[in-house]
Image 1 (tube, one colour):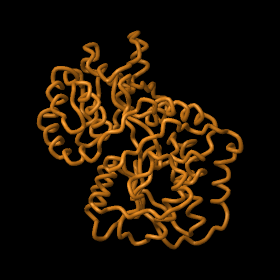
Image 2 (cartoon, rainbow, N blue to C red; image 1 turned 180 degrees about the vertical axis):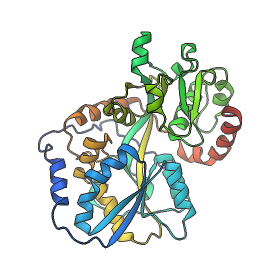
Image 3 (cartoon, rainbow, N blue to C red; image 1 turned 90 degrees about the horizontal axis):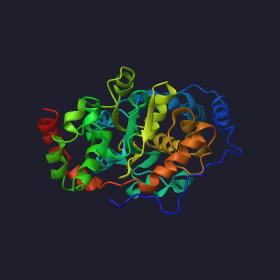
Length: 360
């Protein structure tokens, strides 16, 4: 796999001119040309804020333009991949969103179909272009640290600055960590810890050896996904955990007292990708949908209503999105790309070891 990096000179466009009408324009398109909907496209993606943003502010315009209904099949990346694999011979979905590492697995399994050339595809940041255009990024982010601001303020603790803060003795029983075997966030957090211990993406022995005497004693609970974090922050159980700026923004919008912290060692680049599922029943419509989701206005709406960072630099940015995109631009300066080819080759072994040794 070729490395998908941002060129050093790349910056995120922060332009509010002519952007205030972005949301209104998409909805205006959705309000015209109402026709009987005769076909349905099924798209697998995360539920919650992401699903709401797409179903309310993006899909309606595409549905009206193409006489089709788009239905979300919600689930984690692992859930969606499992569904696609189980129905490989007769796909039940047409498009799926997956975290980049899991997307690389899906491509390797032959589950994805090459996307056709389009203006929007060409406009994407290099980091959002998957090899041979077998998938394309719909949002950019990174896995860093998030912390319970209310708890930190009450304890008068300084905000975290390093992945090794997860091992700080004062946080005994206050760290929540996503499972390496089921969560990209957990995998990213472990790999960064492993690097600090002297390992790399091919050799995780240092990380496994050091876990029980560093971070392990601080972990209150290993969770399969980040769904419980909101509740655990509000109850004061969770103080520190791996998370993305986008997820933090979504929690803050709900009144959850969390903040994002960029570790000094760097965060891990995380691209949410989309791919057209191979051999699906509506290949042309699926192609149209993936192209539409890369368009500047579609991406502007998902940023405005779902805090998803655009992969298309031409997406207009307004309101809170200006600060969000500017922050991501800063975080990308020391963000790390991991070696997904090596990771996916070894992950089944790592998963088994994690489940047996860490989450025993």
